[in-house]
Structures are given as structure tokens and as C-alpha cells.
Image (cartoon, rainbow, N blue to C red; front, side, top):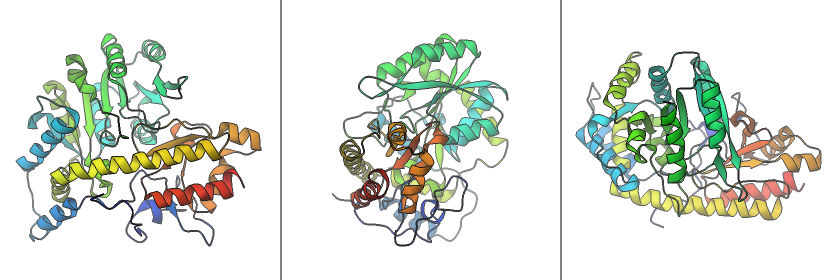
Length: 402
């Protein structure tokens, strides 16, 4: 490969929550016992060096010793438009449709503040990203869950009948849609998105679509933008994207929305401006421009191959060695959502026992209960394959077959 996905980065002391945050935060895994190094598999960032054009773009701008007030460059908008045209088949995207967001979750709340009143019911699929749960709850919204269900082929599916039932029973007029889905890793097919959007149209439900994982698909899968499935979907949906997930830039902060509906766009721009905090950082802007250069396209294509290989290795290992542990192979993201219900029942253990046994030997994975998985673990596979293999060998020896 042209880019480096095999070197093991030492992130200690480099402001990485994934490593330095162990044992210090409420949701963090405990530190390992002596003799085991940390394999960070909880926070959803990557343990790969990003594409070199990003630090090059930052360094070039930072070399000029003035960092005063600025406006986004045309190059910023051009880079986003080209990326979506080439990667997602977008048409008709103009700079006016693109707006900066400090983060996807902030964009979600700005949109809901326009669509709803505090205390309103909002429809979200379960399992649910913890960021949605915390952000909506903190802002006074009431979450109504509609369950994703596993079909006969162990693929997560939307329950359209239940979605419609929940919308009617709870007088819902706003939904948060996650595409690809976190934590389940589903890459929705066009017909599934079309069906969901038909239901939303029928009951006049406005949609906030979190598509931050849209670039991170396993080989053979294609992202279908929610706004692309119909003209109505295009006009009732606020879509949120970010290079931060794709290129490991969360620490630089920088997301953006795509809104085709001018009325909605104007209201959300007003809403997001009220705090005076939703403003772009000049280095974040240049990071995006560096990310969306031709090298970024190549880097993401190679990254997808690496992640696909890691997912295949992990799922095969679980199937062959961890009897009673179940997982639906993710089609996108780099996260596994392990169901340990049968294993715990058969071995008289709790999910706390499983998690802590792994933490003690340095496998720093994440409690799945915060994602509404009752006996689940969420596991990050965006590491060099050698580290993934080491993690599973430890899980085999010290946890599931101890």
C-alpha cells in the first residue's frame, strides 16, 4: 500500500483520550494490570497516521504568523462539493447549501431546535449512539426508540411497521437517522432509505441525518445519501458530515451540514449563530482542504481495504473461537457490536465480568449498555492488524476461554 496502516503509533502523552483517558472518565475502561500495554478499542477514533496532505496543509498555513479573523475560502466549498460529487454522486450541490458546524451533535441539536420544541418526542433507532442520547436528553428532548431487528441472515433491519406505530402513538414530527448506523454498522440500501423517507413524508416528520460515517464502508458497499432518494427527502432532510471521522481529525473540530431547503437552512443558520460559538477555526478549514485533495481519495480507498480486512479477521475469529458471542458483520464504520448474552448465560458471568477481564489485560473496549445493548460491547477495529490480532489472542486466553 502507498500509505502507512501498519506502524504502531505511541499516542501516550499526545492528548489522546483513547490512551491517556483510561481510568479517569466516567465511561472509560479501567487501566490494565502491570505487564499489559493498552490496545485502545473504545473511543471512535483511529490509530493510523492520517493522510500526509493534512499536516502539510496545516503547516503551510501555520507558517504564516497571523491568525486573525477570516472567512472560509472558496476552495473550502469547492473541495466539499467535489468530494460529494465523486464519492456520493451528489448533484446540484452549491456553496449556499453548505454550512459549518463545530460538530455533528451540535448540528443535530440546532436542527431539532428549529423542527421541535423542548419536550417534544424525537424518533431514533435503537441500538443508539450515546452521543444522541446525551445531547437530546441534555437539551430537553424526549427520545422514542424504534428497535432495529436482526433478520434471518443476521443483518440489522429497520422495523418499518414499528416506526410508523411509534410516530403515530407519540405524535412525532422529527427523527434522527444514522447512516451508516452507529453502533450496528449497517449501510442502508436505497430501498430501505426510500421506505423510511416515505413514512416520514406520510406523517410530516422532519429528518436529521447523521452521515459522518459515510466514507468508512467495507469494500463492496456504497453510501446512499438520504437526501438523494427523492425530491421530498432532499427538502425535508438536514444532512451532517465531517472529515473528522474519515481522516481522524476529531481533535481539530470541524463538521458541516448540507441543506437544500432554503427556509430550513436560514432557520438553522440563525439558530446555530445564537451562541456565537459555532465558528470555524482557520486550521480546521485548511485540514479539510488537505483531506479532500487527490491523495485523500487514495488514502480512504486504502483505509477501507484495511478496515475490511480487520473486520473479516475479527468476525472469523469470534465465530471460530468464542462460542456464544454473536456479532452482525458491520458493512460500514470500524466498530463491532458484540452480543455476549449467550456466553454470559452459559458461563454464569455478567457483562461487567467480561468487560473488566478484558480491561485488565489491556483490551480497552467499550461498555455496550450505553448504546442500549443490554449485554453488549462496542469494539474499535481501526488499528494495525497486528494489534487487532494481539487483542483477540488476549480475549481468547484471558476472557472467553480462560
